Image (cartoon, rainbow over all chains, first blue to last red; front, side):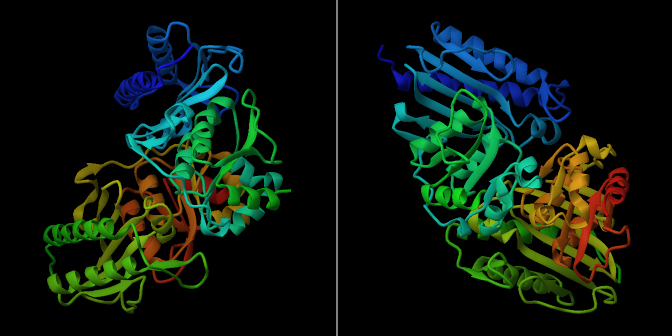
Length: 258
Length: 258
């Protein structure tokens, strides 16, 4: 099957921009429920947008399969011959609920078992990263971007997750102290966006596939490294402690971790 | 002396909006120098904006005195009978240099030795907090705002500074674990803005007067507490470990700190 990725890309962007309007229209008063813990939230708006994406994807791409955070589970991402969507309607639900800001909507698309397209959409700031191997690069609001500079760790800000930092998992504090400082934003999508735009030099967190897949596809399209904290390849079907960084910083951080 | 604070306020806002244009026009390529350490930065743009503010203030308020971060030091803030300005042209200079985002320009004004006016301006997002006792409230881009809800700590995000968190100063990690999560943005101005708008429930950091004075004046105008970590009154003339929070959270955090 030869896909027309330009057309698919245009359709996904239309879908996500419509999703943005729905999110902003509803964000003042979400109904909030907890999932695995008091800090793991889901809202009716997460579910509404997931359903909206699911309907739109099936309307335009009837043969597509979908894996999502809020209930849609399907095996076969690496085997399916057609389009396989991984969607995260609202990444950073805690920020969505508490801040009405600093959250992202994300989509990744595999085609024939290979990464093809990815999207990270900072909803409030209307900043959309799109791209992937099928588009030959990464775009920010439609403008092609270049890879961030391959600086040493000391020259950049370290993006982290707070449980990892507080508990000093993998001795992460040693790496943070070598950097220009720690930042914690509470959304994998927003953190990947910062690394891709060169605003942070790396990001390390324990993430599930729908958290890291869009960022991984975009980052790798720019030549950034996305690896497990032992340097091994990321299993795209399971949760991982994932590091994203330009190559030099990636090596530096891995050496500093224990 | 009876000041016309509405007129002074209008003049300061005009000055800061002009300053914003100057900052954005120059932010792509600042000349960066270090001050006390490799992580304590200053740029030619910090100095340019400080000079611009100084000139504008002296042009409109010839008798005013000024204390600023980048070189202007003057005693007498609590004694001077006229206007005393405390200015921080760019708060979050590391973010300004590395991210071109997430920094603020700030001004505080004492009149007759009393806090009168304050401003926190998120430059990139064009979001200006203004207000103080002389204006009878706090405004976000001209709209009067109400105080954030007096929720328990467990219901809000904890804003922190990374050296304090990593080193667990005052046992701060115990308080963070009671919250909905930790966020670190790297600019006191941006953090105070988040607390004032209810996006974080508290912020704790070691700060100098020009870092915390504008936020303190605005927060106290909304009935929030601004105290040292032992609960004592903040010395507005020196550096302090300062906590800002709604009253209930302030008490909760102080009890959890050691």
